[in-house]
Image (cartoon, rainbow, N blue to C red):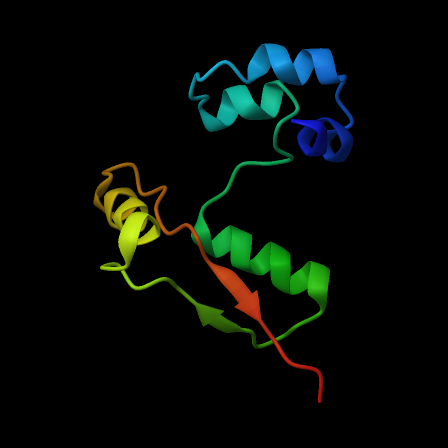
Length: 95
């Protein structure tokens, strides 16, 4: 919780109040200051490309059959809302 309070510039007491096990919608999380903006997978990739200056990143996704991360990704991909594709990271190497 300390990391969230620091990075989101929230008071620790506010973070403790919010961290009670509830799941927030994206809109709620934005209103509460937990996220900066809403967007899906493609928007996240574009944002990271812009922030890092990497024009052609190599996208690495977890194996869907690999434990909890794979289960979560599989469940998200099955959601009709189209909010899927999480647990993605951009990897790059410095020449």
